[in-house]
Amino acid sequence: MAKSGALTVAASGDREIVMTRSFNAPRRLVWEAYTKPELLKRWLLGPDGWYFIQCDVDLRIGGKYRYVWKNDEKNQTLGLGGEYREINAPAKLVCTEAFDDFPGEAVSTLELAEHNGVTTLINTVVSPSREARDGMLSTGMEKGVGRSYDRLDDVLTSMASQPAGVA
Amino acid sequence: MKPSGYAVGDTDLLDATFAALADPTRRAIVARLALGEATVTELAEPFAMSQPAISKHLKVLEKAGLVSRGRDAQKRPCRLEAKRLGQATDWLENYRKLWEAQFERLDDLLEEMKAGEKARTKRKRTPPKR
Picture 1 (cartoon, rainbow over the protein chains, first blue to last red):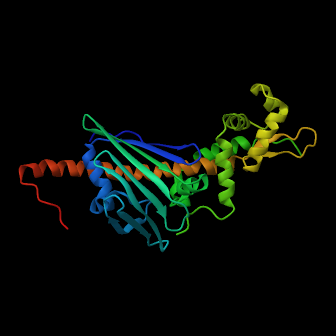
Picture 2 (cartoon, each protein chain N blue to C red; picture 1 turned 120 degrees about the vertical axis):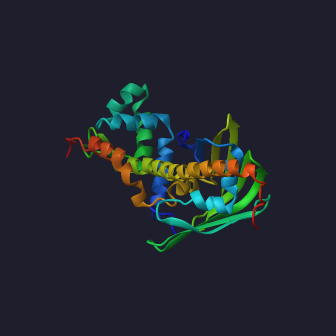
């Protein structure tokens, strides 16, 4: 099928993460995939080895959602939950989000725009602090997941290991 | 689970790393140091900045663990701590990679939903369960 647009992720300012991505589908389907547990369970799985053990959605303003993932190999669970603040199907969804074991509550704004059957998604997550934002960037990131991303590290390391020439 | 890849103390340092990289002059210094070590005098040249101003930026970079200084009392050459930088950029890249994998699954699901919808319009739409 037609290739969807590339994902961009940017850490913006001190507290924001902004993700953009386009999908080759009308936004009402993207909306459903984001708001129905039976569909969420199909794609929002986190890194390899994790799967949903709880996925509850009470889609109304003030309603709560709760996701819990499990990794058998690590024998760990990861919980995420929050409350819906603004629901404007299929265009905008605002909710709070907090990881069980990480302090701070972020606010996530999902915006879906549709043009010629293609949906552009913008997800802005504003954390309460820079520390929380950076924690969110690291949450769920296992060392092994970054497998192929040592490349830049290697390049930089080789650059930095040029002869120092000082005592 | 504990947000992985970081112990207490690490958080502060990563915090400082991201903050240090938020400034364009400091990013330029990092870019210059990626080519090899340099003295403060050498660093100040292309920036049209005073040495004290550059030193101030260097202190921030040092505190963030991104730059270290040589012991040579006269020159104290600055050197990029590439591993630290790699850790900071890896985070964002890992995050992007995680979401890309999820969105690729979502692509597949959306195709399935579109196909299902097409098939369903022929029949009467059944209300969802629950």
